[in-house]
Amino acid sequence: MDLGLKNKTAIILASSKGLGKAAAFSLAKEGCRIAICARSEKNLQNTVDQIRHTANTEVHSAAFDVKNKNDLESFIKDTN
Image (cartoon, rainbow, N blue to C red; front, side):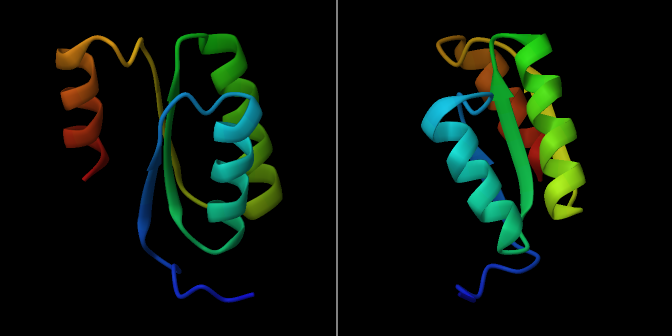
């Protein structure tokens, strides 16, 4: 299905596993550039590698806790 998202940027928080990871994969397969974050650097890097291999798309990532407002704002700013 083509949702018209090709070349758009999608920010998915808490996305190294579970529903966030599934959402990131789905959006990447639609052609989105992906920006993902999680607290665990190891889990996050595994997800980045999987998305790049599966969807062959640009992936921006950062490990931090989304409860930290400054880190979250920096992540969003860096995504643009």
